[in-house]
Amino acid sequence: MFIAFFTFYYYLLLCNMAKKEVVQDIFNDIAPKYDLLNHLLSMNIDKGWRRKAMSCIGEQEKGCLLDVACGTGDFSIAAHRAGVKQVTGIDISENMVEIGKKKVGDLHLADAIELKTGDCEHMEFATGMFDVVTVAFGVRNFEHLELGLQEMYRVLKTGGKVIILEFSMPEHFPMKQLYRFYFCHILPTIGGWISGNKGAYTYLPESVMKFPQGETFLQIMRDCGFQHPVRRKLSFGIASLYVGEK
Image 1 (cartoon, rainbow, N blue to C red):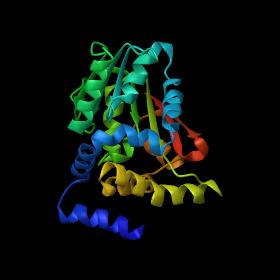
Image 2 (cartoon, rainbow, N blue to C red):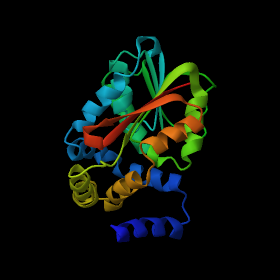
Image 3 (cartoon, one colour):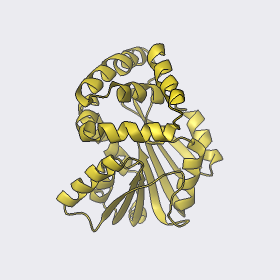
Image 4 (cartoon, helix red, strand yellow):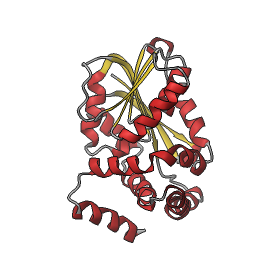
């Protein structure tokens, strides 16, 4: 695991690439197989996590939603199906967005869902534009975490809600040990074999283990302006749902 970790960051330094560029390249490369692997490797549990995130959206917050790091659009589509009238999604990966646009078009939802390429750390949207801002499994990929969260706070309406769904590491025996073995050994092997990019699925556990979770992340949310942030552990702590307000 240490060798894989070192190799990834040595590659980053060798190529003189910012994390943002590396993430963009990774997701552009795995985009065609992303949905298949997402559901396969999570055994479809990720769909339940998304439903729990959608349940956090109140009726008064279903006007306009921004889905940051929207990827192939699953969360954006789920938000619309949950009653959100207008959804905008942005992602740094052009290939992921193109797949998402095709999904939206096939479902005849182009009038309600707009997906576009964009940088979450420098968004073009007006201050206070959205009732809800969401990000599912993408916040750990921000090059500058605080800057991305501050931008999310900026475009959120006063009284609006931020919903962040992210992977985390279980903290207690035996789930901690079992999941770490799966996450660090089995998942990269299967993901790399199917996608043809083992580096992408080595990066996944590395990024999760490096990401601040629990109270540490809640404090970062507070420091970025969010009020009353709370965390809910999902599936024994494999994922975490963070909710805050502006």
